[in-house]
Image (cartoon, rainbow, N blue to C red; front, side, top):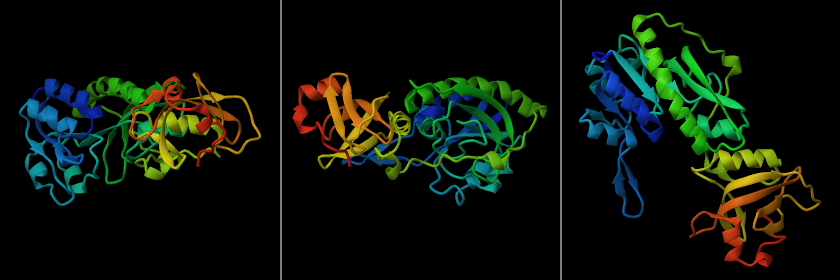
Length: 311
């Protein structure tokens, strides 16, 4: 496949091993990634991980602000195939029709489940027991094209969005490299998605980061780990936004209003929920770094928090 002319479209760190494998095995003629971002008070320009890798290998870089309007540089390159992964924009039909072997997407879920931009977070938040990677042909819909191949990954209670990200990243490259030859030879089997089974994983909103303790302990537990390590779940205590990074489900029940802190010790901060309680084991207060509860109570008085209620 060394002569295969590939355009790769992607943005976050998740895509880096995929692009690395394509650089080794194919002829990557260009990379398409999101425009550079200004970060922090100093508005420093930050490149995407994919742009950084492309610069290292002296690969042509395209960064359209609106790809629906700025596609001619891509189509004029006349690639054999376009491979995308977490690019971040809807690819227009004129691009989809350009490569002779089509446009292929590496999606981090078992389609048709979890179509959209946040499949890793939402797999945990929604309580899925397994997820995976799907290689698919792209069409004009959002992750609706015909499927080519899949690999499954179990989701454990010990998983966070960060660990699940790494699991899926590790299996994505072997699956893609095993699948590409059948795409080129035309021997792969296309499987249409069953739209009736589709679920959606839209990008995480600020509202979805807020922890509502009137939910069940399991729902809160899934939410906290599904938002770890980015963007993080939060709740309001003493008029401050407190980030909640890790927790454990507890089987105790209380008569207290959901959100009440009923106990604090070195093992955690126990908070009542709809059906019992949950123990917060790692949190972050404004202006401080993440800390476990043992460190938290070393610097705070228990009585300032005991029996207080998260809003």
